[in-house]
Image (cartoon, rainbow, N blue to C red):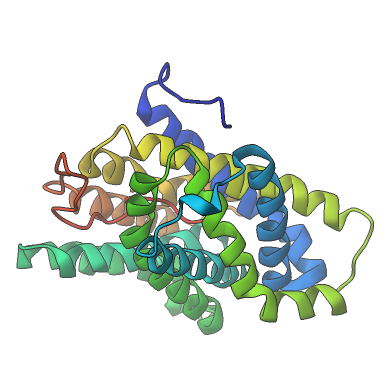
Length: 299
């Protein structure tokens, strides 16, 4: 990863690869979370991610400035709990539904931060898609799973406010190697007890290590490389298709077949997410002109 500059590849391919890696890691985590719980799974992923990232990046602690600390702490904490909440949701509801509900967080933030009040229409439209996805009229909705996905979405919104600033400040994946240890420490109080009291079969730790190599190491590294070469509009519009990848991976890996209503719901969410990016560009200075709906995807 340290040698991978991505300069020879179109930046959109890096973003697409990152999205696929993230959803693949989430799907593969289902077996692990059945043994050590969602918080335990998230914590193991983050711990192994620290090991891999520090081997690859070897960050220079001495290069840190005092003003870097708040954004690193903030990004680390929201990254950790975004992972915990999302895996908790995946334990209860289909992957595609969890991704789409989580997507509401950054989409609502985009509407609130936009100078155009009309931008608030896109979260409202996406909410229609969420209703189609959860099919409350069937009586099978899991309110806890939906709540966890919404909590993950709130973390995702905060993650979007911080991740590109960290990427702009630190070269390569060195910023990631500083925030993931913070994420692991922040989630240890909820993750470690689940690991201790869970079923640590022989395959759990190596599987968690393999998933960690996919996400956060490869996926987040690809994201940061893509963010350095794409403006907010292009990157955010591209990542608005992530709920569709949730459907694809859920179908292929978890055999989660969506209903017709759920397929329509995903299309509505993706369309709303793409439309919300229309006027969100990035200035040359790296400052945000408008907070995009999904300038970076979740773990």
